[in-house]
Image 1 (cartoon, helix red, strand yellow):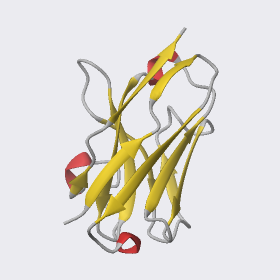
Image 2 (image 1 turned 45 degrees about the vertical axis):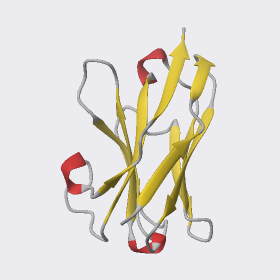
Image 3 (image 1 turned 90 degrees about the horizontal axis):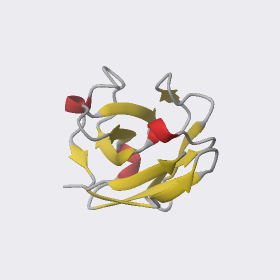
Image 4 (image 1 turned 30 degrees about the vertical axis):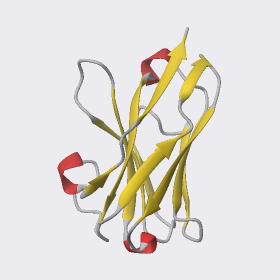
Length: 125
């Protein structure tokens, strides 16, 4: 059983930056592909980014590509999401998630086995 705990959310002005962290415990972190999702009020949870177990492969949603960077430190059992040039439409609860070593349907939330509790990101205009 893997436990995931996100941190780093907060309130930031448009154009600003935040870095989210997700600390994992209870499993072998390097066995898992790690993803970030977000959910805005009244909307469905949407895919943001995913990173392979080694960190060598990443994918991004079109809406964040070029502004967000996902990375991981397997020695620290942590995955990060660096968010730059933030926009008000980036406001959401951000969740990290873990799944086994396959990228099949990497943007589908139902493919992920473990989830954190989420961290709120609010971008003011």
